[in-house]
Image (cartoon, rainbow, N blue to C red; front, side):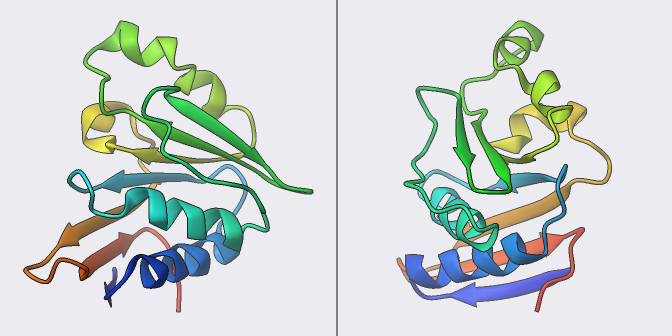
Length: 143
């Protein structure tokens, strides 16, 4: 497990970028953290680290956003409103697992039972300082 402390959204993005540089195709990144913890900021950095230059935004209403780079694809899920199998199937989650790109999933606690056993887990926690975050990453080696 790697643990990082960040003091800004830009620093959170840098940690995401470090992970993105080492992320193999087909990886699933399961994100955990409360509202406003910095999951989307982390995803912006992850996309940049993967070589994907695009505007990353929370897929709250779309449920999934697709970001394509010259060589890689990232599927960004928001499972906040997922409350059962029908909801989960409607996102196309199981199809995306087979698509060959990488998946990053916000609100993974809502689909924990169907996360791949080898997924990378990222937990982002707020601290008493409003800008500070603790980021714990398991299942991946980053510097």
